Amino acid sequence: MAKRIISQARGKGSGTYRVRRKAFRFELKYPSRLDGEGTVIKLQDSAAHTAPLAKILCNQGFFYMPAFEGMIEGQKIKFEGNEIKEGNILKLENIPVKTRIYDIESRPGDGGVFIKTAGSSAVVSRVIGKNVFVMMPSKKEKKFNPNCRAVIGIIAGSGRLEKPFMKAGRKHHLKKAKGKLWPRTSAVKMNAIDHPFGSGRGKNPKSKIAKRNAPAGRRVGHLRPRRTGRRKR
Image (cartoon, rainbow, N blue to C red; front, top):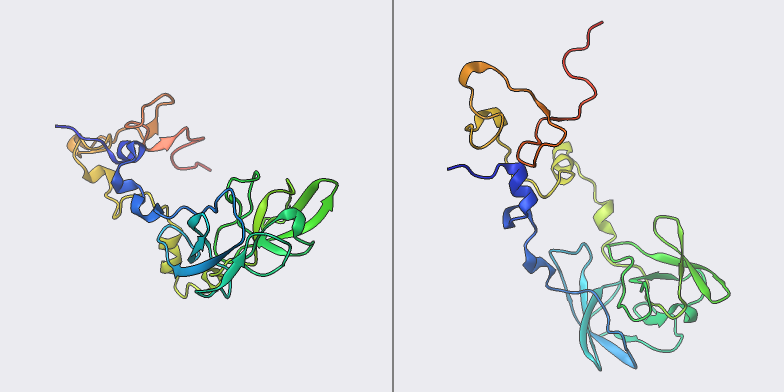
């Protein structure tokens, strides 16, 4: 009985080719309404995030957010006012220019969308009228509603990008796509039912140029190549 070839199995999105759901059990969003202050009750690691996570206890319950550099358990963070202190969650209109921030809301009350990776932060660059402009890590300015909230500080874990690879092989494997089954089996070593290039019967190589309208299972080999074969001088 035939089975799906690798390109078809990847398209289906089975557990073999997807990250485990358990890794994403922590949602990094703060409640739409916050008042008073909160307490950092736990710092923990997450397989799905590059930065360590902080569990914050507040009047509405508890929530998770990326920890900032220097955060400790038992620390108090404020949700109101205009005190500029690392960890405080304030509205952009209350944050002065040149302050480093992260976990910025896209719209007021959505819980934080922008900038959640380790070691990253943005800078409040200027205020024009009712709009606040923030310099993102990409060095591009983005306009925000002044009622959008953000966390003061820089996300912890900046050393992740500073640690050297030491060996070329380590970098080679880290840069590879995570959604591929490893180790890879050569197509010509498979059975005929497992791949279009499978089986060596006849020793007549099939065309490696995929049809323009080929389905996922047949769209293998050279996809719309400009040219094939040895270049003649």
